[in-house]
Each structure stands twice: as structure tokens, then as C-alpha cells.
Image 1 (cartoon, helix red, strand yellow):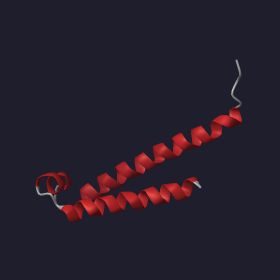
Image 2 (cartoon, one colour; image 1 turned 30 degrees about the horizontal axis):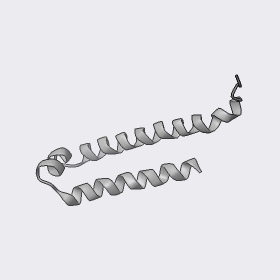
Image 3 (cartoon, helix red, strand yellow; image 1 turned 30 degrees about the vertical axis):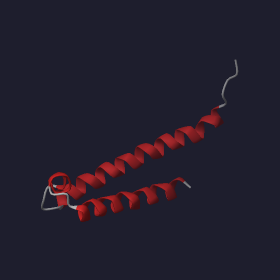
Length: 73
């Protein structure tokens, strides 16, 4: 039985940390977008099928993902 050195776990722990931070940022961004907008995001995207709003939210999430990926490097 071999014991994994503590230094081998650092990349795994860093990945878990950045994953948690990234998900938290996504959640905060979605809550802020929902609070700032004068309409229901869910209703606009699901019921009214507002493609422009879906593209805007997707672009916002991609921007946050790029920032988190740059922070990991």
C-alpha cells in the first residue's frame, strides 16, 4: 500500500476550490441579473422564448468562465 504525498493533493484541492468559487460566481451573477432586470428571466426564456436574453445570459456566463480560467493559471 502506497501513501500519496501531500504535495500530490494540492492540484486536486486547488481545482475543487476554483470549481466552488466559479459556481458561486455563476450563482451570484444569475441572482444579480434576476434582481436588476424588470422582468422574470425564467418567464422570458422559457415561456416567451426570448433568444436574445438567452444569448445575453450565456455570454455573461462565458465571460465569468474566462475570468475564472485565467485566475487558475
